[in-house]
Every structure is written in structure tokens, then in C-alpha cells.
Image (cartoon, rainbow over all chains, first blue to last red):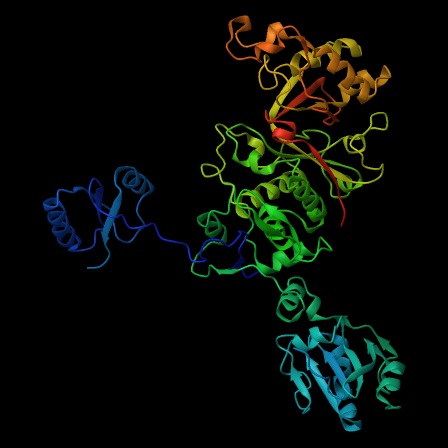
Length: 93
Length: 478
């Protein structure tokens, strides 16, 4: 059976497209995570972001995936979710 | 879309069908005798040489012609069907086509095959594509998700357990379980007070895992839940434990295979599990009653996944639905704002007086031993306990009256502060004999396995009666 179309079980008061989390109005008081997916030179990009955030007085935590070829380990995802309010990751070389 | 039928003869065939292959050589002869249209359900090769042959790949023509068997031969005059036959019956084909020598070499008769339009899964697809039914719910394309069940979780449609993805085909099948129109509004669904249609009920029933035949029970339960007396809105929002519990009586419970016996209040029976769950999913998805949002339950109870069972009806004890006004032989649901299950272990009482005292003492614990006329309660009496009463000639009503008498308590023991406990009833009851339950607040049902001198108390919401919730019984109709 084709399962790509589903009928909405709700009262349809929310948009069909799932809403993304709202962007924070300000970074003040927030902790920003920087995730290096372990692709070459990702660190250059993230280092620069860290510098800029640091000058704004924003707390930064750094993380890295063991390899870009696999999704992040569950433990790492849980750790990041517990420790930061926002996460930035660099996707390309 | 409706189109006039082509005049002349129509043959609907399937290349896969031996009888269709048998008659294939005759089609040229039929074409020679007049206008012939051949609809082939499964192939572009069958009778391909004839100009009137059409590969009915979408099966639209077959569906609109209402084909049940192949081959089917139809004669059309002035755009209207006048006659049809199916399978190969030499005399019928000759009479219908007007070709008196048709199929001289063929046997007198050969049965045909089933039409492709009726194959499992296809019939519903065709009805959705070409039928009269129009489902109103928004279609959500999840083709980018790799797993439909995960997509349902991500959208917040689940109670925490996996749901069956509500595809249009599954929903259509579910709607076959009721004669009610998909767009009929069952009521305003709290807490958001939005109209809840039969179609939305069916979608959530699919997700809960219901069979279509459960729909009448589910719809009756929802109607009962939506009455003013039941007070679902407050029940959803309360910080207390309660949530709708469904007790089913009558032939419908047996027909759909509900469990009233061993482990009746537990897991393992599809109808029990999914009817109760469907009602909870409707509350969640249609009504918007989600825990942590409008559902403010401090602790909740496991019955908020699902709480539905049938009474083990016994000729000596009046079933709950009949006590509540439903005619014998009819089916009904009774909605109760149930909390969890509290067991009563009494393996020693062999006479009704002792067992009734045992029940009464245990029933004092509803809400709090020092509270009275707050929550209602359902006393679930197991067959072994029920036998003690029945053999002594006690009806359900007699048991209830004895319990009400035994549950009268001196107000002085229950008032706030008595016994060194701040909780309790108001001081003004100090000199009165106080009943534990409000009038009509104690319900008795018989259920459970035949071994075990155990019964159970299901306490109700402490806001009972007109201020909160009263039990509501509703007959099950189609």
C-alpha cells in the first residue's frame, strides 16, 4: 500500500507544513553549539564563527562527529540537546 | 465524470483469465457483426488487432461499468446498458450478440475470473479515484520521509505508541464500518471545541488499530463522551487522574470479540485496546487535548492510553446498560471518568455479608478514606466473587444497597482534622451519617476470569455529578 499520502487526523488548525522552531529573538544568554561533521576545513568555518560569537560574549561549545559518513551517534545528539540552545554545523568542504 | 456508453457490444476481459483467452478468437467475429468495444484490464496485447480494443490500465471503465467478473459481455443501446452476461455461456453470448453461430467449437459453458477491480487494495483505490466518496481531510504528503510511522510521531499524532499511518485507503475501509456519512458531525470536540466528523473519527480509528467493525461502538462512545453530563472538557483539563473509560454491554461486544473474561482490564485484546485508544487519539488530535498543554494531569493513569472492556454478562445479574435504561438484547457503551485499577483481595469470604463488608471497607479508599460524595466508583466484581452473591440470592441492586448502607460513616470521623489528618469533609457534617458516594455514584459490573477471588475498584474523577462528570450510557447503533 502506498504510504506517502496520509489524511490529517487533526482539526487542521495548524499549517500542513510542519513549522520549524522559531528563531530566537536574540542570542543573549544562549549557549551556541558548533558541530564539526569532520569534513576537511569545516574547522576553519567553525573557528571563525566561534571568534565572532566570542566577541559578542556568547558562550560556545564545540562538538565533532567521528565521521561525516555516518549520522551523529545518539550519545552525541543527546549531549548537544542537553547542553546548548542552538546548534550550527558546517555541511560542506 | 460520467460518459455515455459506446453503443453496440462491450466486452471486458483480462488476459490473465483462461476463459477470456478462450473467447478471444470470437471477438473479431463480434466486431464484424457490429460496433464492439473491448476493455482489457491487464494487458495491451489482448485482442490488440481489433480497432475497438482499449487497455483499461486505470480500470476506470471497468469500475464505472461495475464489472465483477471477466469476461463480461454488455449490450448497449442509445448509450444505455440493456443486457449483460459474464463468464462464457454459449447460449447467452449468442442471444446477447445476435450472432447465432458464435463459438461453435467452444464448450457450452466456462466460468470466468474475478474482475481486477475487486482485487484486495484495488477496489478502495478505484473508489477513491472514481467513486462518489469525497474525503475532506487534508492530504499530507510525506514522501520525503523514509518511514510513515516516524512521520506520524514527528507530527505529534501519537500517544507515544506507534500508530497505523492513516492512508486514504485505510480510512475508506474504516468508513465502511458505519453507515454514517463521512461528513456528518458527531459533535464539538473539546477542549478546542472543533466539529468532529465521522471521517476524523475513522482516521483516528485507523491510527489506533481498530477494525472497521468497531466503528459503531467507537461512535457511540464518542457521542456519550460529548454529552454535557459527561463533561469531557473538564475531564481532559483536570490535574486529577481520570479519563474516559468505556464499558461495553450487549451483543456488539461479543460480535467484535471484546474481552470480558481473563485479564479483562488488561492488554491483549484488539477491540478492547484499540477502541479505548481511538477515543484518546480523537481527544488528542481533533480536540487538541494533549498532556502538558491543556491536559494538566499531575500523574495521569495508564488508562489514558486506552481503557475499554466488556461486562461479563450473567443471567442472574442485570447488566450495567440495562440497569441504566437500555433494553435487553441491545448493545450500549457506558462512559465513566476512570482512574486506575485498585484490587480487592478477599479469598476468605464465603458469604455475601462478609464479602460486602470487605468491598465497603476497600471502597472507602476512593479519593481518600476521609472524603465522601466526591468521586464515583465502578466496582468490578469477578465471577468467583459474584457467585458468592448470586448463590445467596443477592441481585446487583441488593449488593449496591448493602454497600451504600455499609458505607455510611459518622461525619465526626471524616471531618477535616479528625484522626490527626488535615484532609477531610467540612465541619458541618460532624454530627451526620455521611454516605461515601453521591446517589447513583456507585456502579457495579461483572468481569474477569473465572478463577480468582479478586475484584477491583475503578475510582472516578473526584468532581462527580453536575459539577463535573456523570457516567453516561449510550446505545450502539450502526
